[in-house]
Every structure is written in C-alpha cells, then in structure tokens.
Image 1: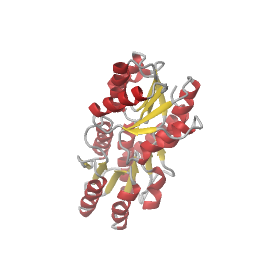
Image 2 (image 1 turned 90 degrees about the vertical axis):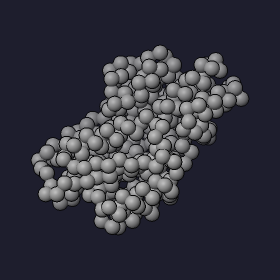
Image 3 (image 1 turned 135 degrees about the horizontal axis):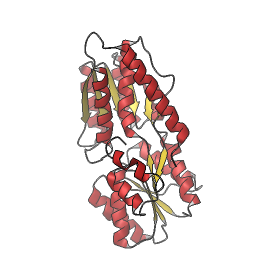
Image 4 (image 1 turned 45 degrees about the horizontal axis):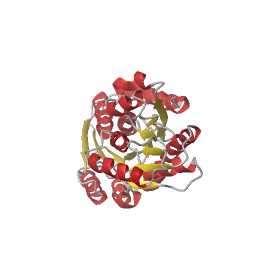
Amino acid sequence: MLNADIYRTAGTLLLALAGAAAVAGTAVAQERYVMITHTQGTDPFWPVVEKGGRDAAEAVGAEFEYLFAPSGDMADMASLIEAATATQPDGLVISLPDADALGQAIRAAVDSGVPVITINSGLEASASLGALMHVGQPERLAGQKAGERAKAEGVTNALCLNQEAFNTALVDRCTGYFEAFGQDLNMIDVSNDVVQIKTRTAAALQADDSIDALLAVGPHVCEAAADAVDEVGAKVHLSCFDMTPGVINLITAGKVQYTIDQQQRLQGYMPIIALHLYNTNAGMLPGANIPSGPGFVDASNASGVSEQAGVNR
C-alpha cells in the first residue's frame, strides 16, 4: 500500500507551490535553472527527473539545462557544478550522492550567490552545505520500510545489490533494510552495467544457496536481478526501488514482491517551482524539506500506476 501520509503531504505542498508560482507571474528577465545529477546515462530513473524539471521550467517560463557526467565520476560532476556556477544561473538543482566529493563545489556556488536546492541523495548533508532545501525520500527510512515488509513476508537471509557503491543514499537503503532485521549489512557492488549486474547476482546466488531474498536498489538492477534468478533457478524474495514498465511487469508476473516508489518527477519539478518562488517573491520557500516518498507499489496497486512508470514516476 502507498504511504498515504507522506504522499498527501507532498501533494499538498505541490499544489500550494504551483498555485503560488502562478500568482507570482513572470520575472522581468527570464530565469535560467541548471540541474546536475549523478548518472552515467544508463539508469532509467533520471529521465523522469529531468522531465519534471523541464515541465516546471515551462510552467514558470524559465530556461532549463540538464547536465550529467557520462563517466559517473564525482570529480567530473564537481567540475560540472563549478562550470555551471560560473555562468551565474538563477538556481542550481543538484543531486548529492557524495557530500565529501561535491561539497566544496556546492558551497562555492552558494557563496557566489547562486541558490541551490539538493535532490534525491544527500538529505543529511544538504543544509550544512548551504542548500536552501532538499527534495527526496529519506533513504534509510525507505530501506527500513522495505526490510520490515520483507521480514514480515518470511525473509531471513538477504543480499542487497548496489549499482553505485560511492552513493551514500543507496548504501543507506541497504543499511536500513538490514536494520529492520537486526542484522549487519550484506551488500555487493553489481555496477551499473546490466550484463554485469546479472552475472554478479547469479554468482552470488550460486555461491550461497541460503540467500532467500534480494533487494535491488535501482530499477534496472531489479530487472537484471530477475533475469539472474531465472537463470540460476533460485527461489528468492525480490524487492526493488523505483519503477519502470519492466519492474511493473515483474510485479504483475509475481517475480517481484514490491518496489519502493519515490515519485522522482517531484524531485525534478518541485525544486524549479521553489527556486522560482524564491527568486520572484523575496525569498519565499516552503518551511521544510519535501519528502517525495517512500511508498509501496505491489500487486495490489501496480495496474493503477503502470501507465506512469518511466514517464512521471
């Protein structure tokens, strides 16, 4: 079932911000916002975030640029932040998977007068770096909720599949999952390459036939893991994070028990609206960070959100 309280809160904030933005009108000079995220272009999660940013920019009449480092290297991402800061945009929207690697560049942007909102990863470090706010789900909590449900469904010996070992948010998901069991973290790096994900997952299952569950912390990881389970012929409880049409199909087929939906379009949309209000209404901002999740999608509600998977969620 969906986490109604969290979604109701996010939905209320969305309506309030959008309404206020409409009242604000258009700034004298066209605003320009730059979004920079950590992705190698292989994760189907991020195009939905980008779409949210573009939709919001269109709604307020702003220019929008989306950047990522194809290498996936944090030093390259920091360089993108520095280059974008030098152009003095009206705001930066930045994912924060590694505060140590990206913190200096973000702080420099803030110190230069560019307002920053962080998204997706880095909730705990966001305020300390001078960001105005953070939009995303509390990752450790999301992992705990996934673990609590897995434990209730009979899981005893799980393995977490992490495609970005440097990403603190993904580690938090895995950590929270095992905290729900009262167990130490059991996680492997499967990379972002779907062939390697399948190979490494299959090898782990073959090496330890007592594994009775897998948590895949990305949607493409989920799909590749399901292929590995089929290849090995294992009987495991598979749960995931985020949605794609493929993940929804796996849920419908009974191969995935549930996925955690963090409504990533909100992570792209809300920061642009918030920055617009901040720039055109004397620093107007929501009074708190905006949680975009977590919520469960499973066999009971998958059909209702299937058309949104990979598009708006």
